[in-house]
Each structure stands twice: as structure tokens, then as C-alpha cells.
Image (cartoon, rainbow, N blue to C red):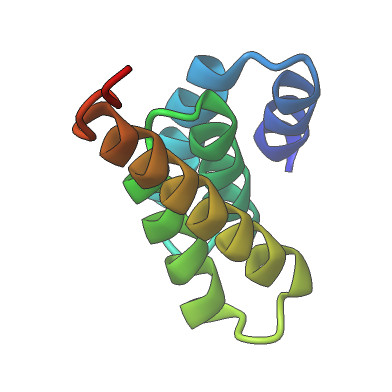
Amino acid sequence: TCKSNYVMCKLKLKEYNEVVERCGEILAKAPHNTKAYFRRGTAHLEKGRELELAVADFEKCLSLEPENREAKGQLAAAGVSFLNMLAKSWFCFLPASAS
């Protein structure tokens, strides 16, 4: 519980790498800890570059706790972020319009 509270504080302070590392430690000892999956997924999502890892953590959280509304919301947010990233990448490949 103490480590979980520490992780929550670090998440609020936007220290996402610390959150990911500490959640990994928690999950190594308690692989069914849904709060650790949720918080690590949130950290991955907030970093913006690790959307696949965020999705995996939210899906794991939901597999353990299917009615978790927060995890469902964050999973949806990760999906939107992923689609936005794909859209930005797509525009890089469009030819410049002729003037």
C-alpha cells in the first residue's frame, strides 16, 4: 500500500518514468494489482510515445477487473491518441499541393 501511494504521488507530480519503474516492481511481487496496471498505463499514456504499452496495461487491468470504469476510459483515450498519431503520420506522406 505504501508503494502504491508513493506511485500515485509521483503520477500527480508527472514523474512518469518513476511511476513506470515502481509499478513494475509492484507487479513483480503482486501481478494481480490492478492499481499498478492502471497507474503504469496512465504514465505510458501521458508520456505520449508508449501508447501500445498503455493499451496493454489497461487491457490487463480490465481482464482482472472488467467493470473498472477508469480503465475503460483510459483505454478509450489511448485509442484516440493512437488514431491522432496515425493521422499525423499519414499527413507526412501526402504530396504537397501544386500552386
